[in-house]
Picture 1 (cartoon, rainbow, N blue to C red):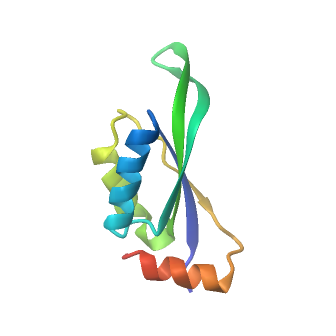
Picture 2 (picture 1 turned 90 degrees about the vertical axis):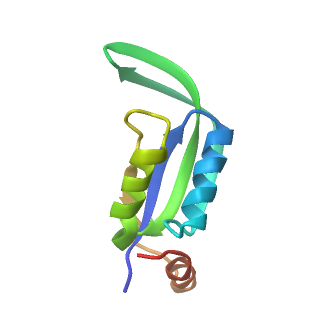
Picture 3 (picture 1 turned 30 degrees about the vertical axis):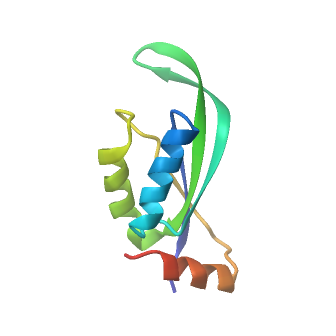
Length: 106
């Protein structure tokens, strides 16, 4: 049985998120990407505390496809160090998991 992952990835804005999300789904690296616009991120970068508005992509994929998804994001994401945080989905309904498996090529 496949293992589902939920991946969090911030991006500069909604437009970039939509572009990245569309490619991830078109390439079957992810079955679904939700985009939460206008989040506030406060973080440390190169010795400074930054306070930025960003968009958050919530990416649904399979554990087996994670290496390819991460490699793609490292190449195509506009940030030098994109946030790619994968969370195991311990409990996923059978129907949703079957749909997820049909939408991701690993």
